[in-house]
Image 1 (tube, rainbow, N blue to C red):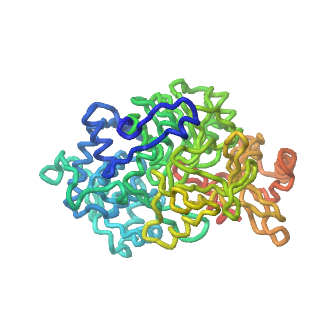
Image 2: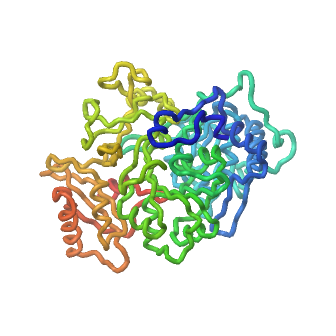
Image 3: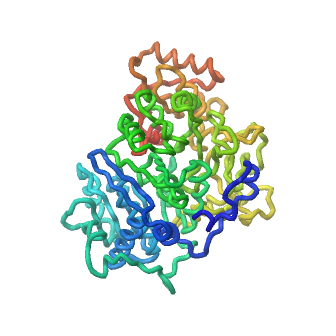
Length: 565
């Protein structure tokens, strides 16, 4: 499959990769027709998806299954008046229905908004009205939270015309099962590729992620139909997926990480996706699934690795795992080193955003350095710049920017918001005519580059702590504090201070056997002072039973700043 889109697939070195990697983007590329249906034509019995849950459920889907079921779903959606350009929100956790729905909407040319199960009615109202959502497809969770929030929101969401629910039937909702098991014209196994005025272009809108900053309402990140091709780099060259071997990325369908690790690049590379539709993250259960299903390539946030290590990995057989990656938040060297001991594998960190595919990562041609994001991906012209937009020297902290804003995989702007889009793509300093036409995209992240070309994360620009004239990156303090035996996990934030502007605050979850005390606070503060520059030590230390996280295990640092003051 890759040969259709890559003139060169194998590379002799990182330099060769950077110089010669190229993606061919057909002007009408469509993930549903050109990847899923093409695999179904070539190898109909090829495994695409293996799904399981906490209640004994297990289902396997071949590419032929997904092709057929998505065709039925596309016909059903079409019968309900959902057409090219219409916006559909999906709240489906890690249910297999998400893959069927997403592929069907691709084939229709509709726009999909993945959404988390944690949305309240207020969140839904904002999203529905901001994006002019026409339909919702929801999973009916056991406690009824999703449906109750949706039903509370609907009176204030005038654009929503269609409501579909799975797996149960409920008054006022259309049952999802009718998409895939009904009869008649509207559930045919065939769905012809749209032609004429309905023809779908690779530049048409395909996907919207809602992403929140530290201020303001969530932004609508818009990707077009070429976006999945950018994830070839994500899957093949960073996650190093293997054709016909199971890959698992720990992510709920409501997050961009799902697109990174559970559908696009993996399917293009012919790697079947394993998904564990867990009710909640329980380290023991995750490790049992990795062992039972013989996962070959695995990617998760560092927080999940930390909890699995604390639970104890020694009694499980992880010998099937050939490659291990992490993303979602920076990797502390301590976790890198522990996984190396237990699994015998280096962890390959990757960095990117909802606005992109993988931007910086550890690729096969060089050895990862513990704590480093790696080196730039070939799709993007990446630089580190100072406050005036000038390139930084090695060792100098600055903002990560992308100079070629037309790169395959990069977002096309913020949906229905020209002002916010213009603010994101700013005029470049010192560049006359770059490929982007004189603009750069500022990621909002701060990093530095070492003399060997490795990039090191410092923090979000909004997360940087300014204390008595010093700029302190949260990640570097977290990395030190996490090495202390008492600390299971921690989050570093800045808190206002009348004398210093801000001071460093540590919110800490303790390992078993440790209790909060003034003595322990002093011990942790002294440990940071002795291990790194003393001015970085946390003047405030708070203990908590757990840190707020997404379903996928990523720490919600913005929420910590808001709630744990």
